Amino acid sequence: CGEMLAEVPEKFRTAELCLTAVRENGDALISVPEDLRTRDLCLEAMKHLDYGSLEGVPRHLLDEELCVEAVKSHGGAFE
Image (tube, rainbow, N blue to C red; front, side, top):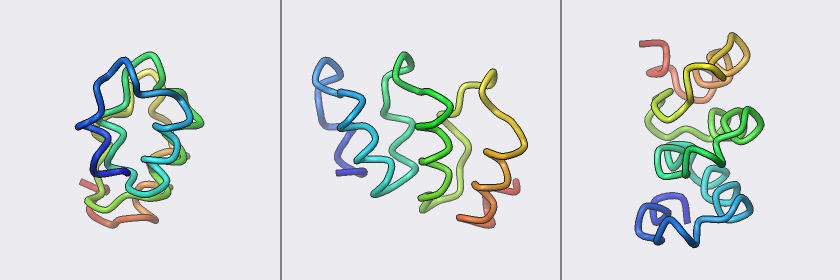
């Protein structure tokens, strides 16, 4: 589901579907519609990164806890 979220038309990307997708692959966050990118969803995504990217986290939500979770999940997020 995580890697396939980008294939789902945006009008069908619900909060529940997006949560399932980021739990499978946190990098799916970049395919989550911006209005659904809550701090909790971003935190969940950071716990399940495959590639270690903070891409997709809105700047106003980015904080130390999100960064720490990202690095714990994938050391490449440190960059």
